[in-house]
Image (cartoon, rainbow over all chains, first blue to last red):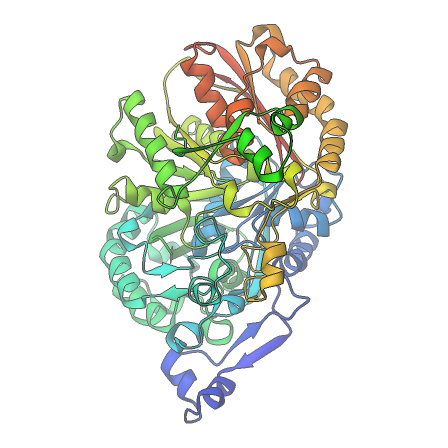
Length: 318
Length: 318
């Protein structure tokens, strides 16, 4: 994992808005988040995380046979962020296929599923999957309910074809009735030609209708989770831990509990890192592993929602 | 497939630049390209193509179990273009998983490979893959060598698990030493926060160093093609046709011939459509099928290059 050097405490947000000390932390449930500096680009952060993952896995970068970028938002429209990370890893002449998967906050889970499927099919042996996001460039501070809960960062994993590991089940569902609940309208062909400052101010920042997103997620998640756990053939008691997308304080507190997920098994990084978009789940996974709460051979449930609105989850053996 | 209503003839470009009649067509090898109007968004064009593909396949949209967006550039940064197409197909409450794959001009081939792998693994039965691109919003007309060769459009396919069809081989390689040859630096986290008009003018348009891209492609393509055809276990004589990315006139004329590809087997849409980014290969595939040059049961080679620089190809039975 990689965290930007600059840590923005919630107390600084209190000061910015002239709020009483402790307001931001009490209202949103996080003490701090990290903010990327000018040198900390999406691909730079991803590469730092990738280097660590390769070192822990004991694999040289040149021995990879697939690099999957799994960011919420790309570094630039062309070429893929995976290509930029391939270059930073010194693999410019390697030929290792490198491309991106985009499922917003679920990009990591979607790419992990894809990588595992390629390995199971014998079409890859060692795959790098990374997520890196810089929410801070696209926040609208006139909407503090949204702006205050996001943080920047990156995380990466290396997957290999070892016996005894793997995916017990994976499941994804998209309900585009919720497509307007989480949007960043700029950055693509829709407003690609505009130079209008007012339009750029409105379309190049992230807007979230948290209540609508929460309502749609709450409607479909119970059935989704039952189907996922049934497919995996395990119960919550069989899991060492649950690694949710760190969407927001209320989502982690009430949302998961209402789904019947045991609170003591839930990994939380939100209080120190905020919602890191696609990098949230792999950062929480990193925390689960390094804190000893998820050990080799144990089971974990990765679960989250993303803009779309999409639901995604996997039961994996570490 | 879907083509925008507005057709821009090369003669109009001659007039724009005060060039002698016929200059654009003679210099770049295309008579026209289509330009998307205000109502012809990426997801609108993709949806029109998707509706046709569903009709030809005899499948209702609700019977899909995966929607893969495979554009060169997304409609907007969040959510995925696949989500927007799901909504336009009236599937907002369907739950059909919908996300994007981004490999620039090779997105379609990469997504096709992914869809075929999911079907082979028994994890999907009917998959919609679409590509739609609006190059015209990101062209710099002070660089006519680049701007004049691109066109807008969309195409889609529906894949199913029928016996006798499928993928004989697929191969992808990325050489990020060529990452600066084809770039659109805006649209992501790198310049997401900028409102500087000069910076926007420079970073929100596509820049191509065609010679560098061509040189790197030429270096790696011969070995790449041999490996792909060897894996498929077929020769060029076994193929009904070859469906290349419609990168440019010279790439189609000299590039393919130098690789030993028989010119009479090559499908060309460039002369009327230009380079449609990710939509080029599926549009050429559509042309191959509707013109009778690729019939049910016959073999085709899909082959192309993309920003990265990446090479990609598949040998498929139709």
